[in-house]
Image 1 (tube, chains in turn orange, purple):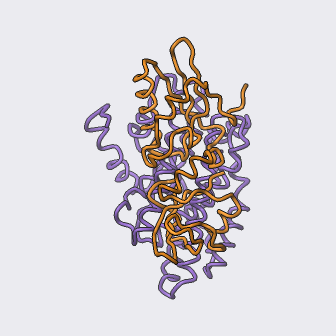
Image 2 (cartoon, one colour; image 1 turned 180 degrees about the vertical axis):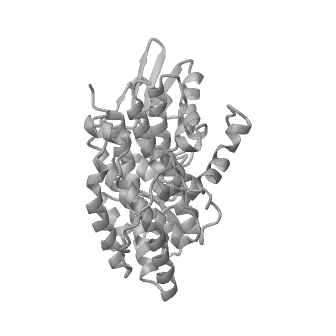
Length: 167
Length: 251
């Protein structure tokens, strides 16, 4: 059995996968998010293994449909299976994706111990996406989607989302 | 059904998530402030997501091509296996947080152990779920401390909620026939062994929150056997209305 920790993706399929974005964070492609664990083509049928970020994430149904539509546009049939194991981690997000997300206005996840310190209110490490200051504070542990928390910058006063570390 | 014990065992876990999720969903748009409103609906979303994973698995076990929706929406009250705690009403915010806290503490311990089950699918769901549940637990524990160690009024209200809801906690640790059968084959968690640790951990948070751990020894149970409190019927009426009125409807 191959480990799904390293995604198994046919290089030829990458250009098509790159056209499918997260419906909530449109600057991120499904590859940036790291939710595609397998994408292989056999006899014209593309089978894709997709893992959810959070159990109840409603974006997953939409992503599944978008994937099928993207392959259909290229004359291919795709089959999407939702897999739960191994569980998704923010470590699987690409570096390029994290930078795009920051430019979009969502602070990228910190590493685990820093994330914990911030969410418990013990440290100020999350960088404001507007002015770059780390003089920020947690407004709400839960934000506009399951994967985010709400922060506010104490220098420029801008509220912004922070993508929580999930391991 | 070949795996009837496994099926019932899964429902015993899944129904807690579904019913508590439904309760939290009732608060959408009614939270005391925006942040808590969003938090409760986010927790609801995680719980419903977990319930879906369990029901999809349970549906496969029936061998009759039952869907997650069939299991969630088309059972009779007696067929729901959730504990009584999760069906208790949203009386006030303190109540909601105490109910959440008492459940989260148990839920986290259950997920920890379920990660070592011999059933691969349950392990996968637990591995995923525990990350979410640890976040829920942090949120509800914070509120217990905030309200307990807050004003005299918030302390009194939260203490009253704890005293009221305490009688539902022992049910977590009761083993049903399905539980026993699943523990025996290494799939299920022996919840009776979690009891001591549960009360110890709950008491630690209560102490930090300057609250008293109730000493009453009267406990009520029945939910796991399908015998629910009077609130359950109302929950199901709202939950099942659409599917009962327009069978097989989809969005």
